[in-house]
Structures are given as C-alpha cells and as structure tokens.
Image (tube, rainbow, N blue to C red; front, side):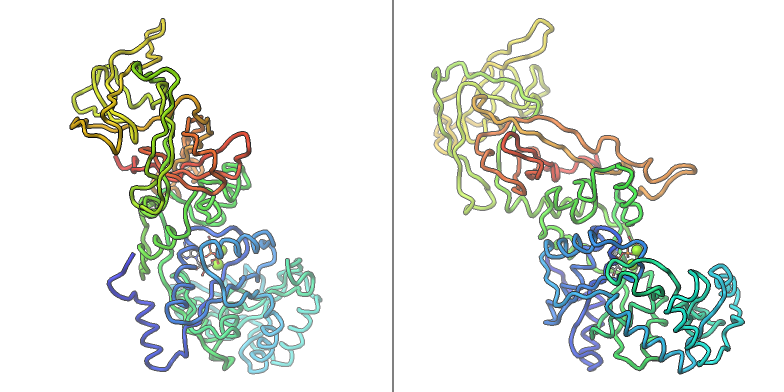
Length: 549
Ligand code: ATP
Ligand code: MG
Ligand code: MG
C-alpha cells in the first residue's frame, strides 16, 4: 500500500531532525511480558520498527518487566518469535529489569535533591489524598521528611525491612496540579515477589512511569511512541528526565488499534485461554499474532494492514473486514489454487471412455505466471459440491442444473442429462456427457457457457479435514454488554465448523504452513495438526465477505 503524505509522527520527526532536536530515529517496542502479542501490538511493532527502518535508525525490543506478579518467560519467548515472524529484527534486546540498579541510583539522586520522599500512607490513603479532577490533592504528612531520613528509609525498604504496601517512594511534584499524574506519583512500591529474571534480589519494584522514560533514556531512544492513554503521563515523563538531567527522548502518542468483532485486552484474551473458550493463545480465532499465524495470515498482509489503517491522533474502531481484505489481497497474488470439493455429490460422465484418466494441465495461479501449472486427473467419475447443482434452478443460476451446461475448471464443458435418486428422493448421482471439443486451453468449439465450477476426480480424491473458522465474536463491539452479561456472552457459537472435504491429489505434497486458494471457496492453510495420515486445513478467510450482507 502507498500513502499520499507523511503521518503526524513522521512530520514531528522531520521537524525535530531539521531543528537538530534529535540526532536520528531510535525507537523501541516495549511490551510487558504478561501475555501474547495481539494485532494491536502488531500495529505498534510495524510503526516503531517501520520508522527506524525508513529513517535509517534503530529499534530495540525491550521487555517492560517491572511488575513481577504477572510476568512469565513463556511470554518473553513468544513475543520474540512474533516480532521476528512479522519480519522485524531488533537492534538490541533489553529488559527494564536490567535497569533496576540504575533506577535505584537515580531515585537516590532525586531523594538527595529533595525531589522524592518515602511515604507511609497506605494505597487507599494515597488515593484519597490525591484528590480528583475537581478537587485538589492534600500533601502527605510524610512529605517533609528530610533527604537523610528518606535515604535511610529507602535503603531499608530495599533491604526488605518493611512488609508489602507499608511504604512507597514518591516524587515530590505538586499536589495541586490539574494533572493527577503529577500529584506526587508513586515511584516504588514494596512487593516481596519473585521476579522471572531478577529472582529475589529486589523487594521494591518501580512503577511504570518511573521505569519507562528512564529505560528509554538509557537506551538513547529519541522518539518514544506510545498509545493515547499515556498523553497525560507525558508531563511526568518529561519531569523525570529533566529532574535527573539525563537524555530526554520525545514521547509521541497515537491512537491504539481497536477492531470490530474483536477483543483486544490482554486480560480478556488471557481469560479466553484460561477458561478454555479457545484452544490456546494460538487458537486460529484469536487476534493474537500467534493465532493469526496459525490461522494462515501472512506477515506481509499484517504489515500492509498496519500501513493501510495508518496512524491517528484519535481513537476509532477499524472494521475487521480491512484485516480480512489485507490477507485476501495478498493471498490472491501468491497462493496457488487447488480444487477441493465440500459436501460432495457424485457426477458421472456417461460418454467418457471406461477406465480412462486424462491428466489436465491447470494453471496454479492466474495472478502469477511464474507459479506454473500442475496436473489434475480427470475421469468419468467426478465429485462436485452439491451447492453447485440444482435439479430445478432459477434462470440466473449459472452453475449446473438438469438440462444445463457448465464448464469444469481446467476440464471440459459438460451437459447434464439426468439425475439418479435414492428411495427417499435424494439426488445421489448426476449424469452428464462431456463435449470432447471443449477441452480447456484447446477449445475451438465456439460454445459459450455462463458458469465454471470446480471438481475433483473421485478416484483418487484425497479426503482432508477442514476447519472452517469464523469470527470469534458475533457482535460488532464484544466489549459492550448488557447488565449481568460479559463479553463471553457475545461469543459466536458457530465460529468453528469441522468437515471433511475432497481434494485433488496434488494436495498431498502440502506441508504445515502452506497456503492455498481452494477454488471458489476461500483461502486455506495447512495446520500443524496434520500428519502423514491426514491433512488438516484452517480456513483463513472465505473468498468473499459474507457478514455484511
Ligand atoms: P493491554 O492493555 O492489552 O495489556 P498494553 O498496552 O498494556 O496492552 P503492552 O505490552 O504494554 O500492552 O504494549 C506494548 C506496546 O504495544 C505499547 O507501546 C502499547 O502502547 C502498544 N499497544 C498495545 N495495545 C495496542 C493497540 N491496541 N494498538 C496499538 N498499540 C498497542
Ligand atoms: Mg497492560
Ligand atoms: Mg502496557
């Protein structure tokens, strides 16, 4: 995709570079390792890594692992895999926890400068003292402790002398500030908790705001890009850097990605996994990167989607159709075609020579000549989708009907003569003749038919398991619920339909991760659940959107 003009972040970067306020574009992607990445993170990844690339700068991957209680190594590993899979490579890998020592020293520096103090208010009291948007805050009774006393208490906090929640270190800013974040924000809290990297070394942990900007600063980040919720944290970000007199990155906020029919909060995604509403973080219906990967999305389609939705200053909700269209658009260009029949019905060519099999040469991808051709066996015993046949059909039905004609893709024109029914009156076989003058690519018959349908030769058709996935949620805004309901009540009860389909023999050479267009049906990927006995396919997207209709 191409964009006509630069977005507001690029414009801000251009201005800072021109004014010599920044010496290059150094960005970072800073996930908290408390869950798997989702499509919203993908947008942030594409933005941060994309800017670094376009401006010849660098982008770091930094784990924002300052909260020991929710973080796990499993997440650290999945995040790296996901970033690489999206096609990006970080300049260097960091952990905010690596900066705990430096942050501690900087906290001492602020204490000595009279800009931070140890406070004994409980969490609840701290909240009450903070006031509200309409009410100024009140100074903590501990606000005027001397730097010496504060330093002593702070060291004792670190040494583990005090139980959880009994003391905090707070920045001494302004309890009357109209910005609540500046009303003496907490810098450290006491938590006797095991950390996935630092173990039991620390029992005080820095708050997000205290850790984040300083980590940016240590790494020489020039543009610290984050989502809009942090806009009113920016004055605090700036206050910390200025008070310490350290390298001062510029924080710029953009609107987070929200998408219809999708929940994006890690807490809710975790709940879906923990309560087994899905098969795992990589369930093909999940909006996680690992879910999208297993679903069959390509990295390129996700990057194109991120570019297409752009970067905005105001929150909005993107139609999930744009994500689905991005993968359609990409796979239309690159996915080889295969003929696969769902819900099959037997079609016999009555004038076909007994036992003859003819190999038809069929184009793999009409959008890509270099994809070449393949051989598809054609015989007198075929399967077609029962949807493609009507005994009696309206005039506009251009598939096969009794007395009608249709082209078999890559094969011949056939004329339907009759049907065979079982005792209950169900059609069990369609009887046709083929027209030998109409072979695809060599047709000089002058015959024109309106419809083309796909087919497979019944012997040997390859049975495959097909998992037809649909949207996980049935409502446009799953987060919106009536009283007494939760987002779980908005789940789509029909988001997975498993069926057996019959494929042309070429399918047997496919392996996990291979993507195809099943002619006239949709895009499919080979799932890792496949084995030597049976191939399993996930539907990535149907060929056309059927929701909005
Ligand atoms: P959640 O609220 O779901 O836990 P988070 O923002 O806390 O998400 P982080 O791991 O802290 O998750 O996010 C890492 C980076 O990805 C941050 O810079 C964050 O702003 C960005 N990010 C997270 N969600 C989105 C989103 N929906 N759209 C764009 N960027 C996002
Ligand atoms: Mg979070
Ligand atoms: Mg976060």
